[in-house]
Amino acid sequence: MSTLRTVPLCLIVAASLLLMPRSFLRAGGQELSPRGFAPPTTFFVPQFGHGTDQFGNVFSTEINFLNLSTSAASVTVATFNDSGQPVNLLRQDVAPQTPPTSVDETALEIAGSGTARQESLNLAPTTELNLGYAVITSQEPIGVEIIFTIETDQGELTSTNLKVGPTLNSASLLGRVQEGGNTGLALLNPPDNPAVTVDLTFVGTSGVTLDSAEVSLEPGEKMSQFANELFDDVPPGTFGSIHLMVEDTEAVAALPLRQDGVELTTQELFNQRSGL
Image (tube, rainbow, N blue to C red; front, top):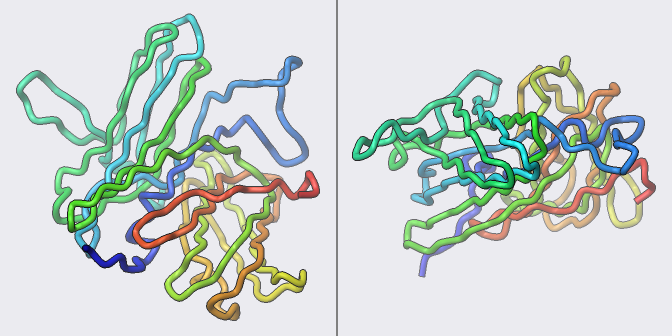
């Protein structure tokens, strides 16, 4: 039986995958159609990766698409590194019986009511873990599903299906600080945003603020850290809540996650403006 070790979030953030539809929720209120739904045309995957970490765990990512329209949908997927520069993380099949290549952008044509799949690919998957984020665009309404898979150095498989979430200006989540992490947070400033500053606070069970942090993100930049890395003054074993607020009216993509050994799963985000 393999021993699960706490891995620094910067090495395993490929698990923290969540799609952020930019037009779904913005500061100051929801952007909704008269019928209550406005299908987004841009989605953000704050973390995306493929390859092997320093402990021999192998990460891979799969994106599945469902065209919700009866018209054909043209979908573009592009991947970037932490600072927003294009990085080759997508599989592209060139020709039958030819090894696939790794590219930073792919274009998919999905028939009306049809489906498609996009896989990750790192040309050196056994020697490196290549990380970044993905941006998905479509002019037709689409459903997007992320499947993240980890294979440990002992051959054990873990698969996680991560759901769609909104971009936001403020939010709250439950948090726990442990040695090595436990609760983590991934933040992505969309490429067409200006530079933003995000204020973070950790509040104990009695409602008293225990520590605070400030994260500055340039356009197209993303950050991923565990709670123990963000909040130095919060003792290990502390349970409470984490609150985030963007200092301007811009919306960012935010993904909370929980670590349990090698497994990472998303946590619930609560919109502060709703009073939750």
